[in-house]
Amino acid sequence: MSIEQLSEWLKVSQNTVVLTGAGMSTESGIPDFRSASGWWQNIDPRTVATVEALERNYPLFHEFYKMRIENLEKVAPHEGHEILAEWERQGLISLVATQNVDGFHQLAGSQNVEELHGSIRTIRCHRCGKRAEMAAFLQKQSCSCSGKLRPNVVLFGENLPQASWKKVIDSIEEADLVVVIGTSLEVYPVNQLPSMTNGKTVYINLDTAKQVIQFDLIIKGKVKEVLEQVII
Ligand code: APR
Image (cartoon, rainbow, N blue to C red; front, side):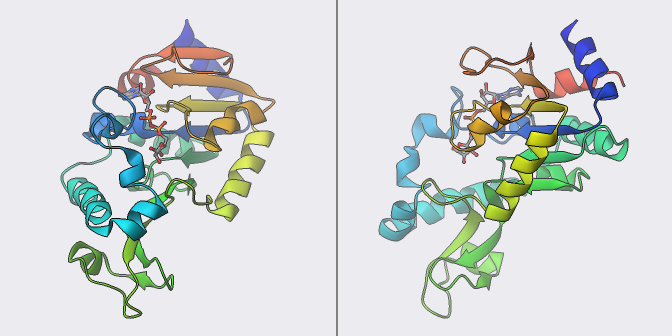
């Protein structure tokens, strides 16, 4: 019933927005954050994913992001990313808003993607903001202004990219259907998005116990398996 229901709603919706989190990429081999096998089981995020960590303990900050960047070379988007790109081509979804920084939605072919937590694929100077080469970051070089190099991810405590955030809020508010995939919805302000729509809301996730707002439809399962079963 539930996957058939999602298929029906997708087909009749004039404006569908998809919101994804780290659970979208675990089947590509990228750990999520809060599952039993997630990054934050062994690492305190405050020691690596904050401005304070960047400024006070650059070696550990650098090691964490260097390892994640180098891991990206060994993994790829899976069929679930490709299905979302196909749904966009068919006009079934208008936007993918993601918390993920791996760039996999774009690599799989999605065109209209908003990276609300930035991207690990590009580098800038933390002091002057100038763009820097990935090789310079991986070789732990400093900026010509002697500032520290960092990925363009949104660290805890930093603001989300404002243009992106506004575009996603506008899209969610106008959506007939919001499909939330592979996220614990534990991180503010993205976790406020599902309650900002007047449309129907669907939650596709392995762990459905913690979701704190009522969804019209909850599908407990693995992203790739669920999306592959949706018949359009
Ligand atoms: N299929 C479906 N759900 C999955 C799968 C899968 N294959 N793998 C994991 N999940 C679910 C987990 O059960 C969990 O509820 O995805 C969710 C991932 O939640 P988090 O690890 O908290 O990741 P996310 O919600 O994206 O975190 C938000 O927190 O650490 C910060 O900036 C980081 O963007 C991240 C933000």
